[in-house]
Length: 248
View 1 (cartoon, helix red, strand yellow):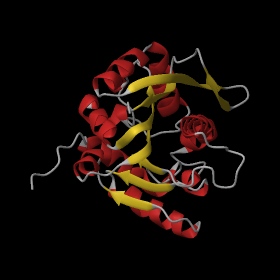
View 2 (tube, helix red, strand yellow):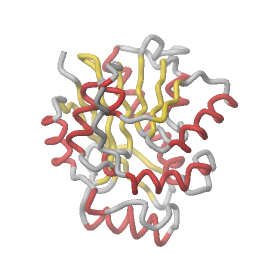
View 3 (tube, one colour):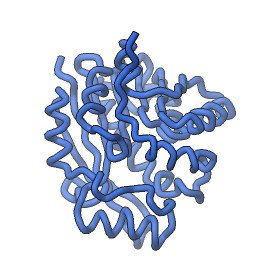
């Protein structure tokens, strides 16, 4: 059988392989994600709950839902989804990330199906999910449209695709690269490449071309005074997240 086409960029994978051991260190190289995670989870859980009419006040509101966390890293999103009752598959192109995620899930008493694989390979295998978490990945792939098309194939009709990335403008260069990598040193220099950032309008167009129906988008806004992140319906100038549906 012919191997699945891949949009993996080997140089991008190598960056995250080198940082894999630090995924669960809140003060390590992934400090920005640990800080952002509560805000990401707020958006993710509310969108999934609304789409599938789930009550987040119940013990396992996502029970019966199958969720794919693509580019799962060390499992910062996979673990909360599992705790909410979902059947979770965490996939990553960096093998060391999977090893770290598996060990942490075992230590946490969570049953998560972690796999060293790609979206394209999962799609070719016929895997299907109710929800797909595609967070901070699309700016690292070689061909965003091909990648997003594979993501759409992985969703069941009526499934929800949640995708976050970084806008491309002077402010995002100043904050996501100069600020995060050079001034605050939250991330190793070279983690992000500004020309790979995607504007909200570009992402909306790509999602539509991939066969998905965009239904919502919000900004993740960092407050340097309170040192917190919040959701904004208007400010998508740096980090932002989108929700789209696979038509039934």
